[in-house]
Length: 294
Image (tube, rainbow, N blue to C red; front, side, top):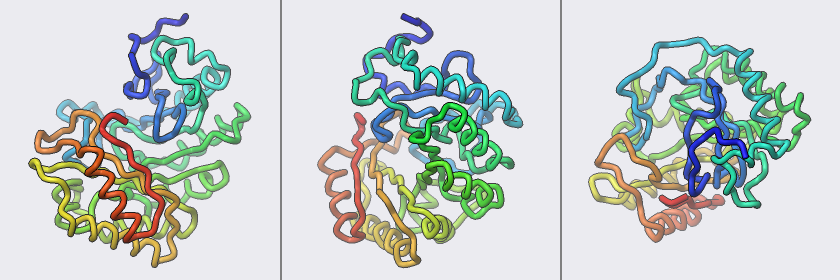
């Protein structure tokens, strides 16, 4: 057995963004992906244009800005896909206890320590992922972009969109709020971006291809989201649908790892279930829930 990482009781809970000696690529077992997700972290400097209260990234010691080496990214993706598709990855201590149902490669996911679409050559990074997928003859492997939706109107993302569409791509777009006041308080964009722009960006992309909405609900200073905020959130979903956007799924989840702010704590299962039911009723979209232990 390969012993490259410290053993973990449950690989689903191990989302370290470090694997072997790779710079950008880190495989993780994900319940949301229902299998293995080959993560791509193009934000090693930890720079992000959000400062979410619930974020688990420690940004107190930022690394220097850097340019992403696309050749290194390609080599690391090919390595991770080869190890995963061959089954050798499951021999590593870190992944050895993975349940049989999760031993499948679901996606290459652009996610990490910041907002991936802020990368100036984001489209080229997506093209590298598409090429690695082609070289490994893995047509069922998705390319997923997990995004805070601020840059969906940028030129690099516009160039990346047809590459995603041609390569089993999905956009997982963050939407955590219904009112601008709550959005500014929780997501804390810098420079300031209005929630209307986030909703407009999601709607624009969702008109071209269905999107997944990722929404995190939590207790703030001990209180769950007010019902009026949830209703306003549903109104935002309905705005996207009314604009011709297609929402494939809403992923409603709560805090699962230590957040940046001590004012943020997780919701209980019953609380999250009630929010999910409210979304289904008011917005008529499919909702999956992911609890604090997911």
